Image (cartoon, rainbow, N blue to C red; front, side):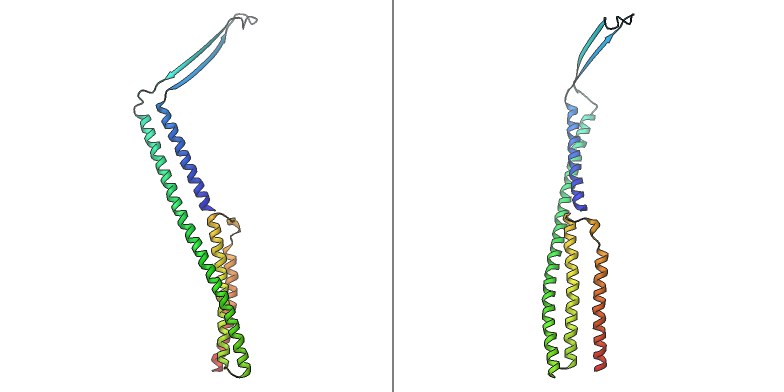
Length: 215
């Protein structure tokens, strides 16, 4: 949202500088002014409007020499227009870079989430196979617990990548001004993510404690 407001603000500055340039150029043109007057006078109130007079005048001013003030104003206005336009171009370049970075980060996060989701499916299937093998006595407890750990780690990675996907998606939308910044509450999402990851890590820790004891 801020970047959109900055761009609009800079465009207004360019328009204002161009208006000032037009005003500065007008100093080289002649000025034509007109005046109109009406007067009346009388010694008696009843004859107040009996003696009336009207006057009308035109005045033409030609700018011959202004002690270089007009030239200086014009030159200053031209420089201001160039500066504001250059600032606008620089801002446009900055916006393009920021948009590109935000979009690429979003695409990367999306790809990571897709991969982590597939890893969860694969780890779940591998865990199921190892449980069945363990029940049949064809695999060890350690292998079963390793499959459990891999599945839990895959879930943790998916939660992390899902959070990153939401984060970079909203960051990208924030850059292009599609959401209200007041609705962007990153701290709450980070807290929820951290709680889920801590719970999964706690489960992992308890499993490996059992493995050590088993060994």
